[in-house]
Length: 202
Image (tube, rainbow, N blue to C red; front, side, top):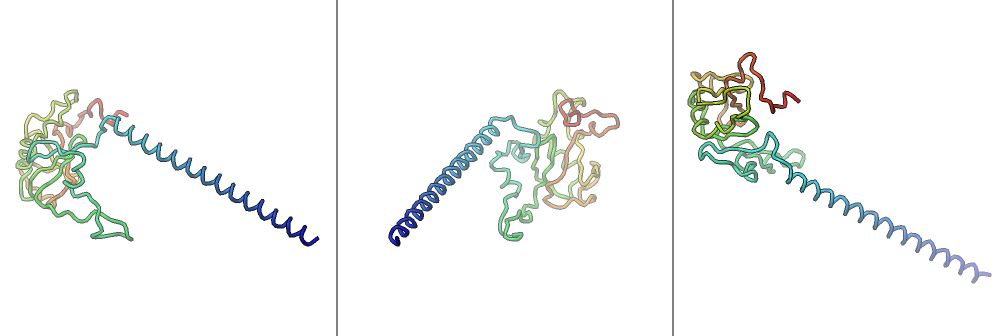
């Protein structure tokens, strides 16, 4: 009787072990399948992003050399690479900028990097932007005449339009500032309409 009972216990134990092994194997296969699906989805998303047209808000221009800044160099040029110099709870952060000789202006979705200083007048900065190729931001199908020269460029910092006769430092623009705006003056006039392809109309 004892041997029969022991045999039944062993058989029951073997059966449970096999069932457990089968369950573990099924779960492993499910996990592998899910992981493969996620990898395929990431690859698909990357391919879709690569095939998509460049959207507004992309691109950068070097006004010193009048040429495009390659997309893979933007973070380096604009000092936007996170480091562990000033970590937050163990997370890398973007450190304070070191370059104090260049300003960056947003114009029609593109960033324009130009050598300029706070003690320059608005006119001096506008001329540097014009020499650097900012006229490429003109929209041929726009509702305004477009920038025909540096006198047509308005500079904005912290919501303030900087007159061409004033120095940037009069408006508290710091050295190396990267958050300025350059815009066609005509777009700031009362009654001026945004360009037909502007998000304003969406």
